[in-house]
Structures are given as C-alpha cells and as structure tokens.
Image (tube, rainbow, N blue to C red; front, top):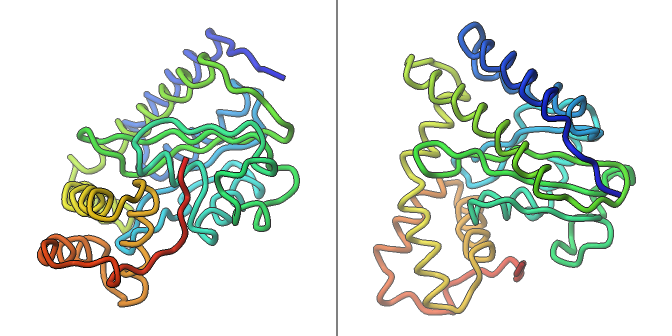
Length: 247
C-alpha cells in the first residue's frame, strides 16, 4: 500500500501553519502540525519528540493516543526509528514495526495498530533537536513524496522553534531546545570517539552515553565531556553496553 500526497492540500496546510507561527507559541504550533498531518498524508497519527538533558527523546505533542503511545514506547525501549532518525540526522522508515528486526525490544511496547512508521529529524542550526514521527495502521511502503512532504512539516516546526528561541521565550521546552543546540557538538564528538575506539555504530554509542547519564543522574553532555576528557585511556571494560542496535 502506498499513499500519494495531495500537493494542493499540503501547500494549503503548510501556509496555515506558517501563519500560525506568528500567533502562537512553539508548542501550540507543533500540536497544530501533528493534528493536520493525517489529513494530508492519509496517516493515522503523528507526534513530535525532543531530546532531554538525560539523552532521551521525550514526548511533546501527538495527534492521538496511539501516536503518543508510539513515542512513549520508543522512550521506554530506548530504541526505534525516531531514535535512529535523531542520532543519524536523517529520515528513518519502517514498513512494519512489528516485523522489523532492527529494534527487537520495541514491538512488545507497541499497540497493535501502530505498524508503518516514519521518523524525520527536526533540524535547527544544522543539528537535530528532535523528531517528527508519523504512523499508519497497516504495513506501508513510504515513497519519496511522503518523505519530501514530511520534511516540509519538519522544516516548518524548526522555523517555529527558531522564532521562539529568537524571541527569548522562557519555557521548559525552550530551555530544552537551547540545551540540545548548545551541547549537540560535544555529544557528537563523544559518539564518534566511542564508534572509532570500540567499533560501535552511532546508535549504540549514543545509547551508552544515555545509560551512563541515567545511571549517574547527570546530563548526557557532561558524560560526553567526561568520555572525551579521558578518551586516550578509556578501555572497553569501562563501557556499559546497552545492546547493539545496528541499522
């Protein structure tokens, strides 16, 4: 099954949302975006997740309960297409999550109606700060028109975020986004070091940083700085592996 995008409906929806960025806060714009996606894509639901100081992607907005549960399932499992989308800063799709062996711990946390999923990074200043996530209730092959249209929504959400931060908006979400931007580089460097030193893929390396942060109740950026500070002498025995989620 493939769903083709109605280009006129897409542009109309994006225009309404772009106008809303001047009238609403960033959280309100994200909610409007995820609520409009199913009308354009023929999807069952959508949501957004943003990175936290502990390195977890956290639920922000969803169009329905299953969409919210998809985001929470990935947060619980610590893996999924949206995590990979964030770490690799690229689109990640699954025809059917319940039959996808890339994330073996995820299906047990999912509702049965969440099948095909696409994760699109939300990019700000060249770095991902979160993901836009869309699901369908039956196996689906995502085509290039799906991805291009989802990128347009992701870019619009990033515009709203940029406007909110430029206006010095003071909110939990704004602070979270500033953190994601300020510390993305050092986290990327630590991920790169762990990959090179221990033969890991990016998702596994990021999961190690995330686990260390959680176990020590510190920010993932502080753990990344620690890893880089002792990099020359950091041996494999000091790593706490959380499983190899290679894609």
